[in-house]
Structure formats: C-alpha cells, structure tokens
Image: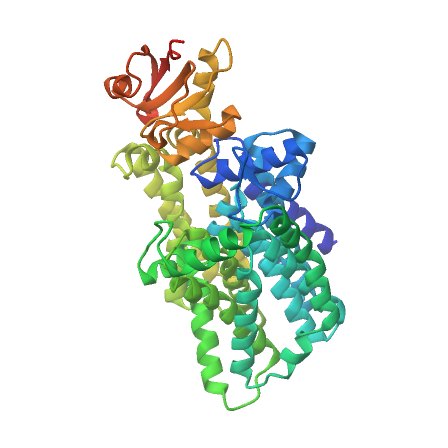
Length: 532
C-alpha cells in the first residue's frame, strides 16, 4: 500500500512540477530556440549524426538532447513544449532513479530523497528548459548513484548501469561528464585513504559498454565533418573553460550563490548537512568511517566538485553546476533521516531559517509580473498580500517542525510552498514572460502580416530574438549587421525608430513601417526588392 502511495505522489508531483504549463510561455533566451531548431532540422533531413543550424553544421554540443527532441517532434509534432519534453522526461527519470536507488541504499528515506530533489528550484527550472543541462545532470547523477550502489553491494549490474549512464552523459554534453566523475571518485578515495575500489571500478566490460554507446556518434560526426574535433573539443570545451571566448565571465565565487539558489527551498538544511558531515569526518578521520558516513562524504564531494571545478572556468553559466544539485538534496534527505531516526528535532535557529527561506519564495512568485516587467518589487496591495502570506507560511512551517511530528513533517509543509510558488509563477508570470522575453508573440504578429512567405531579417537585435524567430518562423533569419541584406522583398525587425537607419542601408529601396511590438521595443518593416 505504501509503495502504491509513493508512486502516486511521485507521479503527481513530477506531472505538476515538470510537465504542467510547458506551453504557457515561449522559448526563452538564445539556447532554447537554437537547440529546438537544430533538432527540427535534423528531423527534417532524417539525419541522426550531424547537428545543423540554418543548414550549417552546429558542433557546439553532442546529440543526446537533439535525439530526444527529434523523437518528441516525431510523436507530438514540432512545438516549443515538445522541445522542452527531453528535459522534463530526464528530470522525471532522475527522480525515479533516486527513489529506486535510495530504496535499496536507505529504505524509508527514498520518498524524501526523490521529492526533495524534484522540488529544488534549479531542478524545476532546468526541467522546463529546452537545453542540454538537464540531460547531462540526470544521466550524470544516475551514473554516480549506480556507482555508489555498486560500491556498497558489489553487484556488477550497478557498475554496468554506471558506465551506461555515464556514456549517455557524455552524449549529452561531452567529456566533462567522465572527467567530473573521475574527480569525484578520486577525491572519495583520498578521503577514505584507500584506492583499491578505483582499480575495481576500471572494469573492462563497463569500459567496453561506455565505448560502444559513445564512440559511434563521435567517430561518425568526425568522419562527416572533419572540423568537429577542433570546433567541439578545442573550441567549445577547452577554450570555453580556459578563456572568455564566449563572453560569460563572472567572478570566481559566482557558482556558490547560484548553488544556494538552486537548492531552494532546502538550502538551509543542505548547508547544515554539509557542515555536519565535514565536522564528523574531521573528528573520525583517524578511525574507520561508518557506511552512513561514507554516503554523506560521497555526496558532499559530489556537491562540491562541480562547483569548485566550474568556478575555475573563465566562462560561467548557471546551468554548469546543475549536476551538483541532486547531491545537495540527497544530503538534505540524509540529514532529515538521521534526525527522524534519533527522534531529534531541528535546532531552533535552523528551524526558523528553513521556515523563513522556504516561505520567502512565495513573495517573488506572487510578484513575478512586476519582477519581469519592472525589474523590482513595488510596495502596494499586492506586496502586502504577498508579505501576509509569507508570514502565515513561515509561522506554519516553524510551528509544524516544533510539534510532536517534528522533522517528519518537513517534506509536507515545505512542498506546500513549492506547489503554491510554481503555480503562481506559471499562472501570473507566464503572460509577462511570453510578451517580454520570447519571440513567440512577435513571430505570430509577423505571420499575420504575410500574404506570402517572405524572408525575415533583423537589424541591431539581440540574438535571443534572432534565434527565436528562426524557430517560430522555421526559416533562416538574415542579419543586416552581418551584411546579410536580401535582394528581394523582405521583412525587417529592428529597434523602435530605426526606419531612417534602415533606409540608408538599403538606399534606393522603399522601406515601409508595418507596426510595433511594444513589449520588447521593436518595430517591423517591409523592404522592397532591388530593381532589376
């Protein structure tokens, strides 16, 4: 009966947190529409090897996301929500894997572990993004969990699973997956002062399985596109890490607050668990470590390695440390399990800190429209309601954690805030996100103007809009800034008031103003073709 209830809860929370409202707003940023369009072009050519964008090889990432999106398009048709399905499905796979592995490792805590991971802010956000970050994080996390189950049980099936999912992680984002896994295992061995399990990890059938899964695509694309090695390995891996080639420079400490934000609403408990684990290890470092201590140490290493490693990178984006977040939520689950088993309550300070941090999420969730449109939290009736609800939730969580149920109720009372927050963001924030951050409504306006398909060009426009138009209009977008001015008649999207500047660039051709898209400060124009 309990097993059935667990599966119902997992299905319900994954359906709401990951799947619900995928189409409420269009693709955001540059990566989402770009990856979605690459998958569409591959499907149109029935080509499972060479990613292309605008018909040109696009060798920035391996193909796992593209393959998954192609399957989604083939089943459901091409759409923005179908482009997000790979990440959604992979996040669900991650949650299910955590439940199954923890059911074997730590019976009784598997539901906490799975739902805490599902409800972390970073996991929810990237589970709803058409990107390669969640495929990498899910496959990498399943690989490390499978490896640890093998470490505890010595069952080769789990070691084979570790190699298989590590291979999928390598197909998701490249050599960073086995490299990070190797660092985690080396650090774990160093902490234990024992390296024998490393030799046993290098299992020939597992290595062959890894090669069988990964090498066919890497070899095939290298044969088909000889510059693949230079572009993918040297440029998009080594140069991205060692230089600011792609203009994503951030300070060294950037990923530490990003990790704390990504672990919300479990941040306070995750930090407490890290501190407790390090203290316990330091106190017992001269003695034999217990099995529970080993898991916690493994999780701390797993959490810290990606954060520290990518902090050394000259290029930083929030999704880089997504593979670390499951370790933080699993540490939280272990922290709660130990206190429940010892019949201990959380300390008063930690209780209040968790209650305040968790409940505070409701404020930006309810005020999401103002944050998107005005980039601030205004004072007024709406803010008063948000603050009132925050106080009610904070007091409710704190009181619940101090009752007889104590720490056992933490999952339930915290998930109430998560559900309210996600629902508020989707219902209240989606229209604002769609109109100000996505090219979808702009593409619809341009489509309504056309009596026949016309080329589309952009002028002084952010690449987010350019890639978005490419996906939603399913055509190559020309850029005046790159000297790509079509000879025949076409539409141009430009910042408001650009007609004079456009007329100079296409001297002798008529430029007609067609309308504006005010939420993004854009105008669109018709430009006549060149006279023969």
